Image (cartoon, rainbow, N blue to C red; front, side):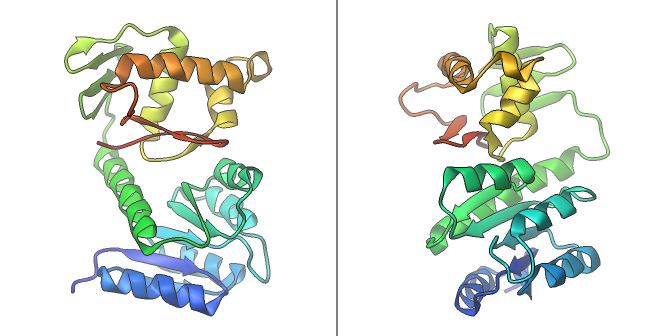
Length: 233
């Protein structure tokens, strides 16, 4: 099977590293391995993988530190795979710049689904690079950034300024989990003037206007206790 993408597995537990490696191999992915942070940073700088699968509990440094270092010079997608299950840990990793967070133990199917989602986002980003796109399209949703207009299935969406800002942030980061704090800091001029409860209210009203089925939203996914993500349809 022809290798499809080059990934980096950063994991110090051999059993988990081998499980991930076997999973990737059966799906045709090419991969490299690193068992500590120093080796991981060397691999990222020298081989430039397309996606990094990163454990946080490494023997020489915390994974959060690696994320912060990489984000000073690269936007390479980073999917955290960690035994840390607290929302605070997930939020810290996502705020540091991780693209997604998968908790151990995990299923092979979920890992592959997260990979596919990240690769779709990567493909979208690459298609937009080198050209200034002012129009975003996803399913029936269309946003014209230049005209500050949004529509669903060809019908104009009547959004408040905050709803429109939220929609644009989610669209510009389609496929990526955005934390509550990130959205608040990007949407409100003074972050301390609002809070998570206000964000939830605006997100609820936004969903009512863009989701075809209010009971089963497909465009905006909630990550309970963490934030929101726009799905690529």
